[in-house]
Every structure is written in C-alpha cells, then in structure tokens.
Image (cartoon, rainbow, N blue to C red; front, side, top):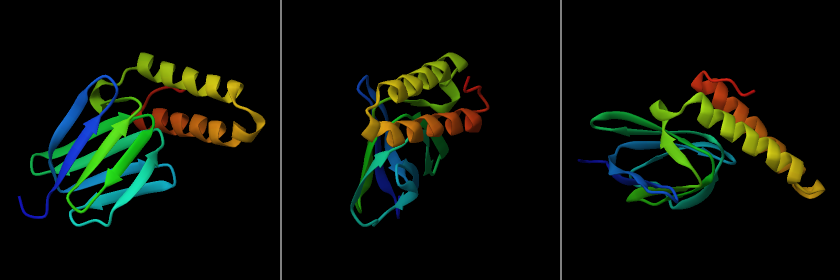
Length: 135
C-alpha cells in the first residue's frame, strides 16, 4: 500500500496489533499527535486515551493507559502499560483505571502530585469519551 506505515501495538501481556496503517492518532502526554508515512522520528510518552489507527480496512481503536510511542518514517511502535480494543472496555475495566489513578494521587510525593492529578484527569476524560462512569 502506497503511503503506508507499519503499526505495532504491544502491552506486557501480549501483542495486540500489527498491520499496515495510513495514519495513527496518538494520545501523547504533551498532546495528541497524528503520525503518517515519512513522519520525522519522534518518541513520546502516552497519557490515558484512545489510540486510533486508520488503515485500508477501516479504523481500529484501542484504549491505552500509558507507555510510549516511537514514530519513524516507516512506522509506529506503541508499547503500552495497558492496552485493549476500545470495544472490549467494560465498566469494570474503567473502575480499575479510576481506582489506580486515585491510588497514584494518594501515594505521590509532593513533587509528583501535579503529574498524578493530570493522569487522574486524563482517566476521567477517557471514561467520558467511552461513555462510562468515572466514579
């Protein structure tokens, strides 16, 4: 496929996806970004959000909770702390993410409080985007 790039998504548990894509929308910690073929090399950390991958067969969406993405001219490799197909996310999964974010805020040192609260806010935004409760 012309103007395509290799896309790979892995988590500690397994490889979730590996296919040719035309664009990858990444929930970067410094803001969303879209990678396409011939993109300049970049490495970014991920925030909790939806990773959207466009391909000839359609759009695939995944929920990620952190990790990093490496973008090169030839492809995108995402190594996520936790990742799952968006369609598979349940309220129970969301409850676990919310609880984990709240625990991170409680355990964070004074210097890390801002980052922990940002992650908690990102998890709440993710729940809203998925139409799930963040309670």
